[in-house]
Amino acid sequence: MTPFRSHRGLLATLDRANVDTDQIIPKQFLKSIARTGFGESLFYDWRHLPDGRPNPDFELNAARFKGASILVARGNFGCGSSREHAVWAIQQCGFKAVIAPSFADIFRNNGVKNGLLTVELKEPEVEEIFQMAGRYSGLEGTVNLEEQRVTLHLAEEISFHFEIEPGVKEHLIRGLDEIALSLRHEREIAAFESRHSPQRYF
Image 1 (cartoon, one colour):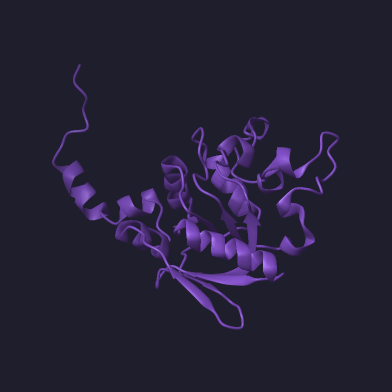
Image 2: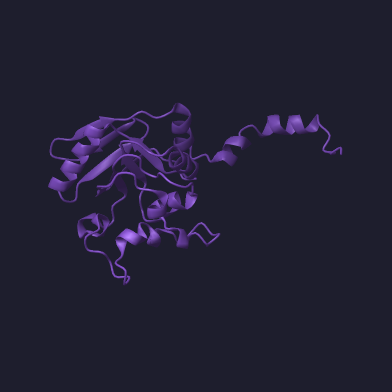
């Protein structure tokens, strides 16, 4: 898993609350057992018209958001069923972090497992980001995990502090997935196994 310390990139806003995982990656795209190729299907039903053409009214199809790597949305992002594919689709579409007032617990946990940073800010702070992104085309921001700070790069920069669990912060900064975390205790695990018989009794 790639370590996350700080990332600067173009902001894209999705002015919708309660964005569920079936909208993030619709169920028809979950057939693949590979962990690649989901980015093009991100928000598929919103991104496309019924005939398959791009929907010009969908926010993220706007030319000014092309190449965006920080997604800003409304509350309860990632609700619905648990599917890591939702996180994969967001990452494979180029997003390194998602900012919202709140996230569904399962989505947040899947994000941590896959190295996607979810940043919770207060609703007025998220609203200010929406206002600034609407006013200034091409607005870039920096999400600094080490400092726990989001900065908008305006003529006069605006910054917001965010909270994050220390264990999750270390997990992301070090780029350690659950297997890597377990292997940090490889010596203790080997010692435990040496003291116990592998035989199973029925």
